[in-house]
Length: 300
Image (cartoon, rainbow, N blue to C red; front, side):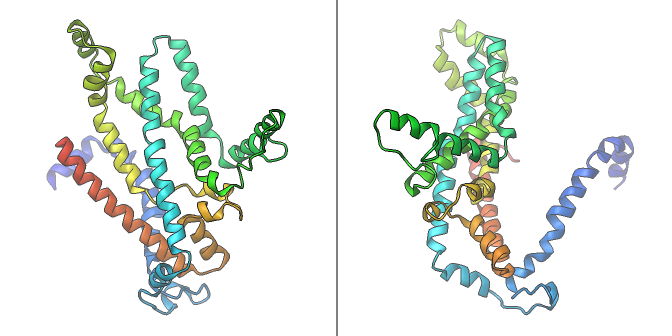
């Protein structure tokens, strides 16, 4: 206790900088956890949280026995898996490529162009997709018509919607994600590359034995964080791209919860599904962290 008070006196100003962040998480993350109880109730807005009748595991049972359970779970897992396989390595690859560029001006230009899409909302991005991929007036389909090829309904074809979701996710996030890995690359000791060059190591050998091990901890950390939200596939993105023609392949847990919770007013059922997602994410984080400790030998 005495040591804690001494630290507070010595670093009080620095600790005070934590207050806004702590308040944010307390108000918007921890206080709302009280309403997890709605997952076990037949929640009624007029009765309130505590006066609504308890129904136990009934909301969870309704979700697991629902006719759309397999479809939305399958879509969520597949899209999450595709994003993990293709979207997660993309910033790493871009950072490695930018790190190898010697021209400072060209490097800054490419970096700026790649992270600018991060600041675009999905509404704007979907507007760009319509401009390029619309069946009638889209630029791509006009080119296909000029080449005497059949038009493709990119935005309504269920077989293409997952590819479109993953591709636009990479385009929107790759540059912003690369910033983290570029920062990690600056922490690698340049003398390691000099020694490797003197020993005759090729660029590929330096990449494999110096660069990647140098950012390994950051990659593992980002992977653990990504796994914690494995069932969060991006509500904004999918909601704006969803339509009745591609819903079979793109409807995920988040869009289903939106329809059930807000449009149908079944708050208890929606809360139960949200709690289910959180538990899965928590288990995955613990598992990924345990595996990371075995491979890396560090305790986070």
